[in-house]
Image (cartoon, helix red, strand yellow):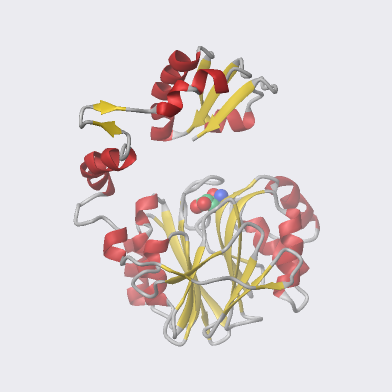
Length: 346
Ligand code: GLU
């Protein structure tokens, strides 16, 4: 996972871009970077390591700009390094982009782009997207984005700035998180709501394959056909403090302390006479699942470990042989699945 921020407003973009990234640090990352649109040129600074490294370098060399994008990277393709950090720019430095996710077919696309004369500076999958945009851009970014979305496979949240439309950030997504926010003075984008809440509580949720155009005074949404669509604002009723670490030093500590509350919330309405937990759904499990003869839990990390325990319980309750698979292996492996296989993705 990584973090993305985007800003188009009447004030300097950098404070939001950096503050937003710091609110997203809990997601984990190995490098950080920003692009600012400064006097119709793009200023990009990116560096391996902590966000503070980037902030220290910007302190010496801080540009201004009312429009910009930011990124904390969790490397999937190419080692953590300055060059592989995001943002990535096209060859004549007129388009800059941050990407969260994985472009599965980047090798094919890269070969085609190399054949067209594009040069690559990084080892990332993400860089193909900025060159593809360059290839398809003929004065209309929405049209170029539509073509890019048709070409790329995988998961992505993308934020794009360009000297060709210096007041605007374009964004789109598929299977990667992205939320947008609007205040009187600016439009914002980020991977998660807490990054926005110090600036606005009015957010828009963008769906897969939709495109949004962020300008200082409004956000316009488009569907995959490029037609404008209407979106409702959602008002978030809590502040960023509440959405953050709740006074604990780390998220892990906060989550450990939250466990009694989380468990009692989960079991609310299912505790009988303060002493017995009733789970009536489990009584019918055996008959509801009788069409299956095999079950998989598919998960990563701590969820994988929870599923090891879950598989044991499901097998006991249903009599269906159940195993747990690491999602990364399942995704690329060749699991034996038919209509009698139950797959539970956690
Ligand atoms: N796949 C991209 C890379 O390795 C983006 C990773 C991320 O989501 O941070 O640069």
